Each structure stands twice: as structure tokens, then as C-alpha cells.
Amino acid sequence: MKHLFTLLILVPLFSFSQTSFEKQLDSISTPEEATSFLKENKPTHGKLFTFNKEKHKTRLADDLFNLSKGGKKVSRTDFKKTFYKVIDKAVVDYYKFNIIVFDAAKTSNEDAKTKRSKVLAQYESGYRFKDLAKHNSVGPTAKMGGDTGWIKAGEMSEAFDNEAFNEDHTLNEIFSIDDLENKKYYLVIKTENRTPIEEITVLKFTEDIE
Image 1: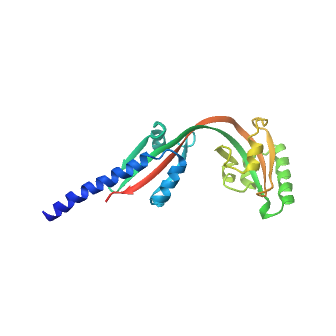
Image 2 (image 1 turned 90 degrees about the horizontal axis):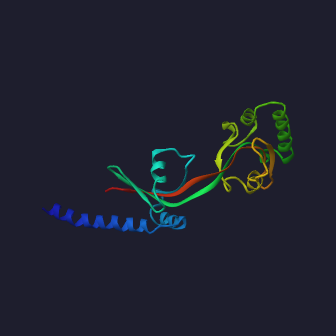
Image 3 (image 1 turned 120 degrees about the vertical axis):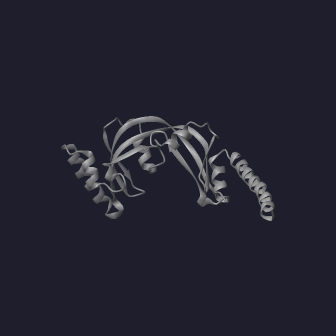
């Protein structure tokens, strides 16, 4: 009887806590508010991330894209309750490129430019760009044959953005970019023109069920 009485006291308190938490979640409407919320509420249990409709093809992504801005999805297991809230929805311009990156930080500016000129000459003589990227490029795109996937302004350096997103470059045209600040030199081919793609900013937060 004593245990039952204790349980009856705790259940309303737990319910109040959950209701209070969900009200706090409902009040978040901007990425800035979401970031502040995470800092104040167990940041290891949550994060703010972006879904791109072309990059993310999971069932969860589909469910979230079907929500309106401010919409929520809740998933439960025996031990955890995970909240997903759509903080923002937007249509953003994306492009695709193939790139070869030469890192002057590991050699010198002159060595990097000399190597780039040699690789460009190989490409112009008939070598496939993706093979040249695999053997000469640095960074994560090298093993993908230089393919950046869909990217938007701000994901690369300012020097890259200023040149690569210039509409004067036609599809499959090869051009160079010098990123002096970061000591990187590029060979670039645009493979997809500007494409508006829907993306959503989502707040994920997980709570333990006690």
C-alpha cells in the first residue's frame, strides 16, 4: 500500500515534467532558440541538423519532410523517447562539381600549381577526370573520383564559392581556383547547374524513460 501511494505521487510529477518539457519544445521556433535549448538541456542528448531532400532518402527523412514548419514527430522505445521538431523549411540552391584538390600546405604554392598544370595536361590529353582525382587529389572527395555531391554556398571556402558558383561556368567546363588563404589549388568541373532543393532544419532531442 505504501509503494502504491508513492507511485501515485510520482506519476503526476513525471507527467508534469513531460508536459513542461514538451511545452518548452513547442516554444522553439528558430535555429538560435534550438541551439540555446540544447546548451541548457543535456547537449549530449540532442543536436540540430539539416536534411536535404536529394541527399537523404530514409523513411525518417520522408516523414520529416511531410511535416510543416513547427511540426513534431515522436518515436518511443522501452527506454527512450526521441523528439524531432522541424525548426525551419527552405528551398536552397545546390550545385554539383567534380574537383581535384592540391594541398600547398604540404609542399609549396609553386609545387602545387606545377602539379595542377601537369594533371590538367593529362586531362586534356584524354585521361578521365575521376581517375586523375583518385590518384592526385587530397581530401574526402578523392576516393569518390572528385565528386562533391550536392553542395551549397558556405560549405566550401569563400575563394571556392566566389569562383565555382559563378554562373559563367558552363557544364563540363574545366577551370582552376586558387584558394590562397587555405593554401589549396583546385581543378573543377561543374556537373550540375543550380538546382533548387528543399531542406529542413530539425531539432532532435532524446530523453530517457525512467
